[in-house]
Image (tube, rainbow, N blue to C red; front, side, top):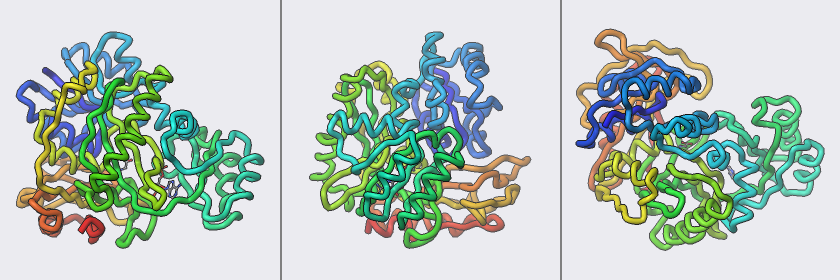
Length: 418
Ligand code: AMP
Ligand code: GLY
């Protein structure tokens, strides 16, 4: 079968790498892809937003399955467009992907179906939002409802900061239309955990846990980023007893909810959780594979990913199992100097060939025989080993052998898991 993967980051490199191992895959394409992906797939320079061009390409090449990486493609309705012309595609429909693209929709879904989440109010009127925030105790969490490149969540330490956040999001439209509605939420403390489960509309297949590191600097300081590193399993934050509660309190209720609401959800579900002293709370739903989480999860997956994706589309997950390596995986992200602020691209990368870790490219391009940086997150370096400590050592040893001007990374990825 010929496959097309849509997207251009480390997640998509990992998806292409894993799908390519399937004996049923004959040819693999990636739109638009990146420098690293071009080593193992044919990259096609099509825009993710150009659904007509993507449909045409898939029809011309006889591609049997398209796999969607990023959230904005799902929110724009790419799955509905493909299905309207009977093309097979992996991901939820636009209506179901509202669970990620509208935080108001997701909150209402969670409340309706008894999924534990932070106490909150949802508003399309700034005065009402301010009045609600005034009655809460600080810190107060203010969230733009729509997609805002991961930047739409503001933790306000004071009431004045909450008022400013409401003004910037709703009145000054700092994130555009994503700010036409806001969710104002109680601040939760605890450990975060990333859950991934394939969902076919009737049942689900739970992946091992992972933990992300969103802040730019060691010790969870600095600005929020797309993710500076991750590890799996995250057994310390999600021991078996809590995982059982994720099944009953989050996933079982999610399945009952999509059925009751008539949502066509067939795809990956990635709830971001906060494990608090009062139990599990869902911070958000993502309707896609996480990045960088996918890099550690697919490194640990033994089963054929194509089989799992097809079982999801064909609604037979109930009869499907997945097998996982018992090893732990740690992924360290190497970023451009200045990220998540502004940074320069075009820096030559050296030391890639010597590595004994698995390297996925996030922001690179090819220049003859060289790789140049072309993004904030540049590379993900994943070590796999019998213990988390050894996997961490392996990832950092590989990272130490790689160089580009201005390269930065966190030195404490997975420390919390040890
Ligand atoms: P979200 O996009 O909703 O997952 O929020 C992004 C990040 O903001 C999360 O990964 C958390 O670190 C933080 N966050 C979101 N909601 C809350 C909350 N209610 N309490 C504390 N931190 C939060
Ligand atoms: N790792 C967080 C995300 O993919 O949204």
